[in-house]
Length: 199
Image 1 (cartoon, rainbow, N blue to C red):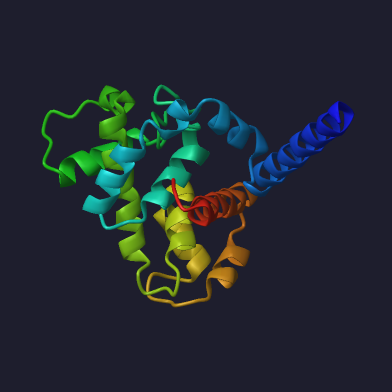
Image 2: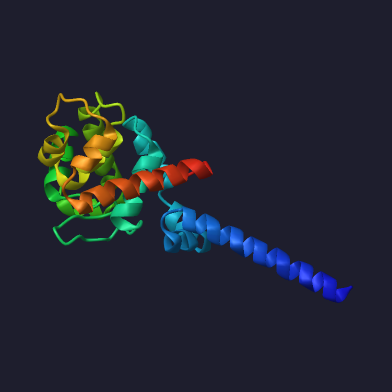
């Protein structure tokens, strides 16, 4: 009887382990998913901020969180190689556009290390790109390409601002492999959050 129970427990643990491994592999980033399960406070600490700011800009909070995942892995102190800063890896120029639009006269680029400021500025920038591409059947890949590579490159890949093309055609037109991968990874992460029903 004891031997049978021991075998049953081992089988149950193996089944649970296999299920966890399968879910982690489906997430698109196994290491991140395991870290999220082990240390959820790091990966969920900005969820309320993301929801609030995303709601203000009428943008999917799961998309914003996916951008943060890809840009900084939730490290508010991350400093990029080209001067990008914080959770959403904003450049000084993008942040100044946000500050001007938000009528913040005394904005300093160092404030981008504050998660609240960074998420507000980054979400504004992403929402602006989404509006620019709102004529498309799915503006998300267009906006993400713009977020990563700039508006002029995204317009070149789309054939212009007013051209409506299928998202897959646009994706195929992206001649920067890094940007194509960036778009694919963020959309996959957003879809992962949606499948599990929470950020």
